[in-house]
Image 1 (cartoon, rainbow, N blue to C red):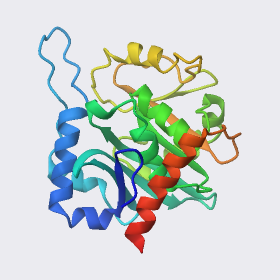
Image 2 (cartoon, rainbow, N blue to C red):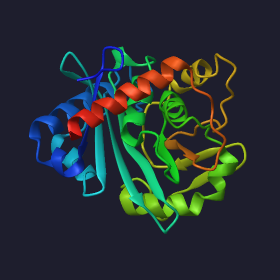
Image 3 (cartoon, rainbow, N blue to C red):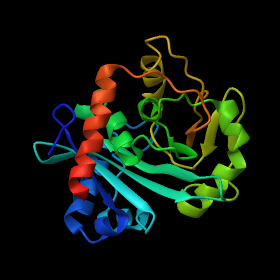
Length: 254
């Protein structure tokens, strides 16, 4: 199997995942160990956010795709996405979960993992809802576009309709703050945000402005890029990594 660096990337359908207890169990264990912590002010011991395999299975359906990254056979990252043509605009690729082992972050694993989901596609838009600035940057790198709040605002109602259909955390009465300087939604997810300011500073260390606003407690950023946006240039190494990840997927299919 081809690899991007040391990592191997695979892609499966949601139905395959549901029928694979081993994959479900490994994904749930990775989530429980590396996704984040509940917000418990005043407590010295942080409690990890845990996910049971039975609950994870609810995230899969006929439109779901799951991409995984492994190192020496061990699962170190996965992403779940809903991909569907919606309201005659084109394919929406919404990543509903993205988890990377803490020891493999900031190594472009998430970027390559996301790209393995959609390749060099011409979807209408790609995106995720997350309180993790690194996940947002991975999305931008994988799609070669920046998350621009003003552009997201133009399609906010469209995105909310998709999210209400395919996710459990975008509800009809969910509050949003999507303007020219902010893009976030109240998902009522009481995740610990204590590291978020530091992470926002880190993702700006090369002079790339953070445009999605200051995150509120229990809210998450709505990060989306669109086909009609100007594309960023890729380095030769980035092109090679993405081609390698795509080759991994092709070898599974044939």
